[in-house]
Length: 298
Image (cartoon, rainbow, N blue to C red; front, side, top):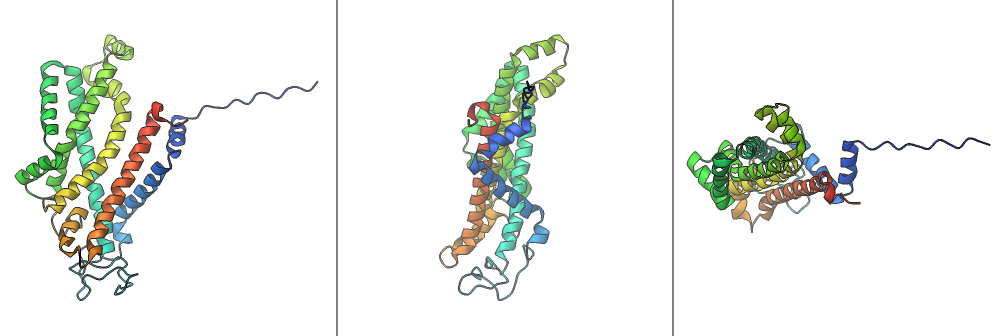
């Protein structure tokens, strides 16, 4: 009698494979990731991809329409602005500025938010109450109004825009980390770590923090798009990056008087903001679904 074949043992997928399997089921998230990676590549390699400098002016080539329309020039695929600067080049360099703002705001807010959130959760009492009331006060003011107030005090510039938007979104990370940490502090492994003599710093940042990262990563991903929108709003009001910096919000502000006569000068920066924000939000939604087992698709 022939021996029966040995059963095939299926090895469980690793955590990354499981994450990617869950993430890839969301087509919108995959599409958002592809678009986002394209924008990142354009931003990083703008010096080589952009056909011209972002501030180079071409005399006699002002307000040219896109190349595929009547009156367009094949040397300027997306036309030129009121000063004769290539729109495609300015949009590509603008991606670098907008992503830099979004990532900078996210990084600053996450780092400070983690520190304050863990301190509030661990210390409790008066320190927790004071920190949370300050965060509540910040959140009670409309985000754009608060950002305008901060920039008005510090002065309009790219650096101050990052500071202002970081202040606006800091409470989101503080409250998220504090809530996640409080949920962890009552668990058995935390009690065991305390009994073993683990110090407070190690307990907060080595034992507790890794178990709070999943919601924090999702919030950070979505926070990039919020920061880009907030910075664009400040730029549109003339309180963000100053000319000739090719920031998308500032480009909208410079072109608003041509919305009827030369609409592409206004439309293209607006589309750049729209596509970037939507792609980041789609990616963030997919990230949330993939990191939360309750939201994973069967």
